[in-house]
Length: 268
Ligand SMILES: *[C@@H]1O[C@H](CO)[C@@H](O)[C@H](O)[C@H]1NC(C)=O
Ligand SMILES: *[C@@H]1O[C@H](CO)[C@@H](O)[C@H](O)[C@H]1NC(C)=O
Ligand SMILES: *[C@@H]1O[C@H](CO)[C@@H](O)[C@H](O)[C@H]1NC(C)=O
Ligand SMILES: *[C@@H]1O[C@H](CO)[C@@H](O)[C@H](O)[C@H]1NC(C)=O
Image 1 (cartoon, protein in one colour):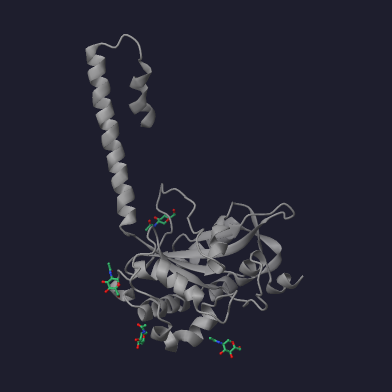
Image 2: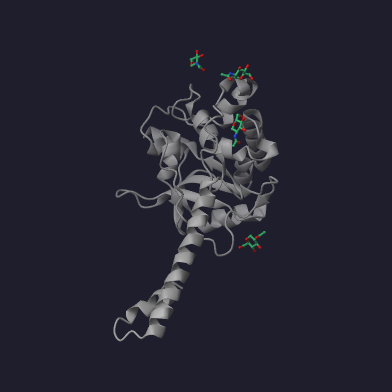
Protein backbone atom coordinates (compact mmCIF):
# COMPACT_ATOMS: atom_id res chain seq x y z
CA UNK A 1 0.00 0.00 0.00
CA UNK A 2 2.76 2.42 0.95
CA UNK A 3 4.74 1.46 -2.11
CA UNK A 4 1.66 2.23 -4.22
CA UNK A 5 1.24 5.61 -2.65
CA UNK A 6 4.84 6.57 -3.01
CA UNK A 7 5.56 5.32 -6.51
CA UNK A 8 4.29 8.49 -8.29
CA UNK A 9 7.14 10.37 -6.60
CA UNK A 10 9.48 8.43 -8.86
CA UNK A 11 8.48 10.69 -11.80
CA UNK A 12 10.75 13.64 -11.27
CA UNK A 13 11.11 14.80 -14.85
CA UNK A 14 8.72 16.42 -17.32
CA UNK A 15 6.03 16.95 -14.81
CA UNK A 16 2.96 18.02 -16.62
CA UNK A 17 0.26 19.88 -14.72
CA UNK A 18 -1.95 16.77 -14.59
CA UNK A 19 0.87 14.81 -13.03
CA UNK A 20 1.40 17.60 -10.54
CA UNK A 21 -2.26 17.55 -9.79
CA UNK A 22 -2.05 13.82 -9.18
CA UNK A 23 0.92 14.31 -6.94
CA UNK A 24 -0.91 16.88 -4.92
CA UNK A 25 -3.87 14.55 -4.54
CA UNK A 26 -1.59 11.75 -3.52
CA UNK A 27 0.12 13.90 -0.93
CA UNK A 28 -3.28 14.74 0.44
CA UNK A 29 -4.13 11.04 0.57
CA UNK A 30 -0.87 10.35 2.30
CA UNK A 31 -1.47 13.12 4.82
CA UNK A 32 -4.94 11.78 5.43
CA UNK A 33 -3.59 8.27 5.81
CA UNK A 34 -1.09 9.53 8.38
CA UNK A 35 -3.80 11.42 10.24
CA UNK A 36 -5.87 8.25 10.50
CA UNK A 37 -2.93 6.45 11.99
CA UNK A 38 -2.18 9.29 14.36
CA UNK A 39 -5.77 8.87 15.48
CA UNK A 40 -5.08 5.24 16.27
CA UNK A 41 -2.11 6.26 18.39
CA UNK A 42 -4.25 8.78 20.21
CA UNK A 43 -6.83 6.11 20.88
CA UNK A 44 -4.31 3.77 22.43
CA UNK A 45 -3.21 6.70 24.58
CA UNK A 46 -6.79 7.11 25.72
CA UNK A 47 -6.66 3.75 27.48
CA UNK A 48 -8.99 1.73 25.29
CA UNK A 49 -8.51 -1.98 25.48
CA UNK A 50 -10.18 -5.16 24.25
CA UNK A 51 -9.05 -8.13 26.23
CA UNK A 52 -7.64 -9.14 29.57
CA UNK A 53 -4.55 -11.26 29.86
CA UNK A 54 -4.17 -13.54 32.83
CA UNK A 55 -0.44 -13.90 33.22
CA UNK A 56 1.03 -16.84 35.11
CA UNK A 57 4.75 -17.12 35.62
CA UNK A 58 7.01 -19.98 36.59
CA UNK A 59 8.83 -18.91 39.75
CA UNK A 60 11.93 -21.01 39.09
CA UNK A 61 12.49 -19.26 35.77
CA UNK A 62 11.89 -15.84 37.31
CA UNK A 63 14.38 -16.63 40.05
CA UNK A 64 16.94 -17.97 37.61
CA UNK A 65 16.86 -14.85 35.55
CA UNK A 66 16.81 -12.22 38.20
CA UNK A 67 19.70 -11.95 40.58
CA UNK A 68 18.08 -11.81 43.94
CA UNK A 69 17.39 -13.49 47.16
CA UNK A 70 14.63 -15.83 45.89
CA UNK A 71 15.46 -18.60 48.26
CA UNK A 72 12.56 -20.99 47.91
CA UNK A 73 10.58 -20.31 44.77
CA UNK A 74 7.15 -21.98 44.95
CA UNK A 75 6.88 -25.16 42.89
CA UNK A 76 3.64 -23.99 41.29
CA UNK A 77 2.78 -21.33 38.72
CA UNK A 78 1.94 -18.05 40.41
CA UNK A 79 0.16 -14.92 39.22
CA UNK A 80 2.11 -12.17 37.55
CA UNK A 81 -0.94 -10.08 36.82
CA UNK A 82 -4.24 -9.51 35.11
CA UNK A 83 -3.50 -7.09 32.30
CA UNK A 84 -5.72 -5.24 29.90
CA UNK A 85 -4.04 -5.29 26.52
CA UNK A 86 -3.09 -1.91 25.08
CA UNK A 87 -3.58 0.21 28.16
CA UNK A 88 -1.35 1.09 31.07
CA UNK A 89 -1.26 3.57 33.93
CA UNK A 90 -4.83 4.70 33.43
CA UNK A 91 -5.46 6.62 36.61
CA UNK A 92 -2.68 8.33 38.49
CA UNK A 93 -5.12 9.63 41.07
CA UNK A 94 -6.13 6.22 42.34
CA UNK A 95 -3.26 5.24 44.62
CA UNK A 96 -2.71 1.70 45.80
CA UNK A 97 -3.90 1.18 49.35
CA UNK A 98 -2.80 -2.06 50.98
CA UNK A 99 -5.48 -1.80 53.65
CA UNK A 100 -8.18 -2.22 51.01
CA UNK A 101 -7.06 -5.78 50.35
CA UNK A 102 -6.02 -6.67 53.85
CA UNK A 103 -8.20 -9.77 54.03
CA UNK A 104 -6.85 -11.08 50.70
CA UNK A 105 -3.23 -10.87 51.82
CA UNK A 106 -2.74 -14.45 53.02
CA UNK A 107 -3.98 -15.73 49.64
CA UNK A 108 -2.04 -13.06 47.76
CA UNK A 109 1.19 -14.07 49.51
CA UNK A 110 0.61 -17.64 48.43
CA UNK A 111 -0.58 -17.27 44.83
CA UNK A 112 0.55 -13.77 43.82
CA UNK A 113 3.85 -13.46 45.66
CA UNK A 114 6.55 -10.97 44.93
CA UNK A 115 9.16 -13.65 44.40
CA UNK A 116 11.99 -11.26 44.97
CA UNK A 117 10.71 -9.35 47.97
CA UNK A 118 8.21 -11.71 49.56
CA UNK A 119 7.76 -9.32 52.42
CA UNK A 120 6.74 -6.23 50.54
CA UNK A 121 3.73 -4.94 48.71
CA UNK A 122 5.60 -3.06 46.02
CA UNK A 123 4.84 -5.66 43.32
CA UNK A 124 1.11 -5.39 43.98
CA UNK A 125 1.28 -1.61 43.92
CA UNK A 126 3.03 -1.81 40.56
CA UNK A 127 0.39 -4.18 39.14
CA UNK A 128 -2.40 -1.96 40.43
CA UNK A 129 -0.92 1.31 39.15
CA UNK A 130 -0.01 -0.04 35.75
CA UNK A 131 -2.76 -2.56 35.00
CA UNK A 132 -5.42 -2.48 37.71
CA UNK A 133 -6.33 1.16 37.16
CA UNK A 134 -7.07 0.26 33.51
CA UNK A 135 -8.94 -2.96 34.28
CA UNK A 136 -11.07 -0.89 36.67
CA UNK A 137 -13.05 0.39 33.67
CA UNK A 138 -15.08 -2.79 34.06
CA UNK A 139 -17.72 -2.88 36.78
CA UNK A 140 -16.48 -6.32 37.74
CA UNK A 141 -13.01 -4.92 38.47
CA UNK A 142 -13.69 -1.36 39.55
CA UNK A 143 -12.03 -1.39 42.94
CA UNK A 144 -8.77 -2.70 44.32
CA UNK A 145 -10.64 -5.37 46.19
CA UNK A 146 -12.47 -6.49 43.06
CA UNK A 147 -9.38 -6.37 40.87
CA UNK A 148 -7.21 -8.48 43.14
CA UNK A 149 -10.09 -10.65 44.35
CA UNK A 150 -11.36 -11.42 40.85
CA UNK A 151 -7.85 -12.12 39.63
CA UNK A 152 -7.40 -14.64 42.42
CA UNK A 153 -10.78 -16.21 41.58
CA UNK A 154 -9.82 -16.49 37.92
CA UNK A 155 -6.51 -18.05 38.83
CA UNK A 156 -8.34 -20.66 40.89
CA UNK A 157 -10.92 -21.33 38.19
CA UNK A 158 -8.39 -21.64 35.40
CA UNK A 159 -6.33 -23.87 37.66
CA UNK A 160 -3.34 -23.97 35.35
CA UNK A 161 -1.28 -26.01 37.81
CA UNK A 162 -3.75 -28.90 37.89
CA UNK A 163 -4.26 -28.75 34.13
CA UNK A 164 -0.54 -29.06 33.46
CA UNK A 165 -0.33 -31.92 35.95
CA UNK A 166 -3.22 -33.68 34.26
CA UNK A 167 -1.56 -33.25 30.90
CA UNK A 168 1.62 -34.75 32.31
CA UNK A 169 3.52 -31.53 31.71
CA UNK A 170 5.84 -31.33 34.68
CA UNK A 171 9.16 -29.63 35.29
CA UNK A 172 11.77 -31.91 33.82
CA UNK A 173 15.34 -32.17 32.70
CA UNK A 174 13.99 -33.41 29.38
CA UNK A 175 12.80 -30.75 27.01
CA UNK A 176 9.24 -30.20 25.84
CA UNK A 177 8.14 -29.15 22.40
CA UNK A 178 6.42 -25.79 22.66
CA UNK A 179 3.76 -26.87 20.17
CA UNK A 180 2.91 -29.87 22.39
CA UNK A 181 2.37 -27.64 25.42
CA UNK A 182 0.40 -25.15 23.41
CA UNK A 183 -1.81 -27.77 21.76
CA UNK A 184 -2.43 -29.57 25.04
CA UNK A 185 -3.49 -26.38 26.79
CA UNK A 186 -5.62 -25.31 23.84
CA UNK A 187 -7.31 -28.72 24.01
CA UNK A 188 -8.19 -28.21 27.66
CA UNK A 189 -9.19 -24.57 27.61
CA UNK A 190 -10.63 -24.45 24.12
CA UNK A 191 -8.67 -21.28 23.32
CA UNK A 192 -5.15 -20.54 22.16
CA UNK A 193 -2.85 -19.48 25.00
CA UNK A 194 0.31 -17.46 24.62
CA UNK A 195 3.49 -18.99 25.93
CA UNK A 196 6.56 -16.95 26.65
CA UNK A 197 10.14 -18.02 27.14
CA UNK A 198 13.50 -16.68 28.11
CA UNK A 199 15.58 -16.96 24.95
CA UNK A 200 18.68 -19.14 25.28
CA UNK A 201 21.87 -17.44 26.38
CA UNK A 202 25.25 -18.23 24.86
CA UNK A 203 25.96 -21.19 27.12
CA UNK A 204 22.46 -22.64 26.91
CA UNK A 205 20.95 -24.77 24.23
CA UNK A 206 17.28 -24.03 24.60
CA UNK A 207 14.76 -21.45 25.58
CA UNK A 208 13.25 -21.64 29.05
CA UNK A 209 9.54 -21.66 29.79
CA UNK A 210 8.65 -18.45 31.61
CA UNK A 211 5.05 -17.33 31.34
CA UNK A 212 1.72 -18.74 30.25
CA UNK A 213 -0.98 -16.28 29.32
CA UNK A 214 -4.67 -17.03 29.00
CA UNK A 215 -6.85 -14.32 27.56
CA UNK A 216 -10.33 -13.21 28.54
CA UNK A 217 -13.05 -11.04 27.13
CA UNK A 218 -14.42 -8.11 29.07
CA UNK A 219 -17.12 -10.52 30.23
CA UNK A 220 -14.31 -12.60 31.75
CA UNK A 221 -14.88 -15.47 29.31
CA UNK A 222 -11.89 -17.27 27.84
CA UNK A 223 -10.90 -16.23 24.33
CA UNK A 224 -7.94 -16.77 22.02
CA UNK A 225 -4.94 -14.66 22.87
CA UNK A 226 -4.46 -13.65 19.25
CA UNK A 227 -6.92 -12.95 16.53
CA UNK A 228 -6.37 -14.32 13.03
CA UNK A 229 -3.87 -12.09 11.27
CA UNK A 230 -2.87 -10.27 14.44
CA UNK A 231 0.84 -9.65 14.69
CA UNK A 232 2.92 -10.89 17.57
CA UNK A 233 4.30 -7.53 18.53
CA UNK A 234 6.70 -7.56 21.44
CA UNK A 235 5.04 -6.05 24.46
CA UNK A 236 6.65 -3.07 26.06
CA UNK A 237 6.96 -4.16 29.63
CA UNK A 238 10.46 -2.87 30.10
CA UNK A 239 9.64 -0.34 32.77
CA UNK A 240 9.45 -1.46 36.35
CA UNK A 241 11.85 -3.21 38.60
CA UNK A 242 12.15 -6.71 39.99
CA UNK A 243 9.57 -9.19 38.86
CA UNK A 244 8.10 -6.71 36.40
CA UNK A 245 11.47 -6.36 34.70
CA UNK A 246 11.49 -10.11 34.15
CA UNK A 247 8.73 -9.73 31.59
CA UNK A 248 10.84 -7.51 29.40
CA UNK A 249 13.32 -10.36 28.98
CA UNK A 250 10.69 -12.73 27.68
CA UNK A 251 9.44 -13.24 24.19
CA UNK A 252 6.90 -15.51 22.58
CA UNK A 253 8.47 -18.98 22.57
CA UNK A 254 9.93 -20.22 19.32
CA UNK A 255 8.50 -23.46 18.01
CA UNK A 256 10.84 -26.19 19.13
CA UNK A 257 12.23 -27.50 22.39
CA UNK A 258 11.95 -25.67 25.70
CA UNK A 259 13.24 -26.30 29.17
CA UNK A 260 10.72 -26.35 32.00
CA UNK A 261 13.16 -26.14 34.89
CA UNK A 262 12.52 -28.09 38.10
CA UNK A 263 12.56 -25.89 41.21
CA UNK A 264 15.75 -27.24 42.76
CA UNK A 265 17.69 -26.51 39.58
CA UNK A 266 18.16 -22.95 40.91
CA UNK A 267 20.23 -24.30 43.77
CA UNK A 268 23.00 -25.50 41.49
C1 LIG B 1 -9.56 7.91 38.96
O1 LIG B 1 -9.70 7.42 40.26
C2 LIG B 1 -10.40 8.26 41.14
C3 LIG B 1 -10.34 7.64 42.54
O2 LIG B 1 -10.94 6.38 42.55
C4 LIG B 1 -11.82 8.43 40.62
O3 LIG B 1 -12.53 9.31 41.48
C5 LIG B 1 -11.79 8.99 39.21
O4 LIG B 1 -13.08 9.03 38.68
C6 LIG B 1 -10.91 8.11 38.34
N1 LIG B 1 -10.75 8.74 37.06
C7 LIG B 1 -11.01 8.09 35.92
C8 LIG B 1 -10.74 8.83 34.67
O5 LIG B 1 -11.43 6.94 35.92
C1 LIG C 1 -7.06 2.90 52.74
O1 LIG C 1 -8.18 2.06 52.82
C2 LIG C 1 -8.74 1.99 54.11
C3 LIG C 1 -9.81 0.92 54.10
O2 LIG C 1 -10.72 1.13 53.08
C4 LIG C 1 -9.27 3.37 54.50
O3 LIG C 1 -9.84 3.33 55.79
C5 LIG C 1 -8.13 4.36 54.46
O4 LIG C 1 -8.62 5.67 54.69
C6 LIG C 1 -7.45 4.32 53.10
N1 LIG C 1 -6.24 5.13 53.15
C7 LIG C 1 -6.06 6.13 52.31
C8 LIG C 1 -4.76 6.85 52.44
O5 LIG C 1 -6.87 6.42 51.45
C1 LIG D 1 8.32 -9.41 57.15
O1 LIG D 1 8.77 -10.69 57.57
C2 LIG D 1 8.97 -10.80 58.95
C3 LIG D 1 9.54 -12.17 59.25
O2 LIG D 1 8.99 -13.15 58.41
C4 LIG D 1 7.64 -10.55 59.67
O3 LIG D 1 7.84 -10.62 61.07
C5 LIG D 1 7.10 -9.20 59.28
O4 LIG D 1 5.85 -9.00 59.85
C6 LIG D 1 7.00 -9.07 57.80
N1 LIG D 1 6.60 -7.73 57.42
C7 LIG D 1 5.57 -7.49 56.62
C8 LIG D 1 5.31 -6.09 56.30
O5 LIG D 1 4.87 -8.39 56.14
C1 LIG E 1 -9.36 -19.53 18.12
O1 LIG E 1 -8.29 -20.00 17.33
C2 LIG E 1 -8.57 -21.23 16.67
C3 LIG E 1 -7.31 -21.70 15.99
O2 LIG E 1 -6.69 -20.67 15.27
C4 LIG E 1 -9.70 -21.03 15.70
O3 LIG E 1 -10.02 -22.24 15.08
C5 LIG E 1 -10.92 -20.52 16.46
O4 LIG E 1 -11.96 -20.24 15.57
C6 LIG E 1 -10.57 -19.27 17.24
N1 LIG E 1 -11.69 -18.90 18.06
C7 LIG E 1 -12.20 -17.69 18.01
C8 LIG E 1 -13.38 -17.45 18.89
O5 LIG E 1 -11.76 -16.82 17.29
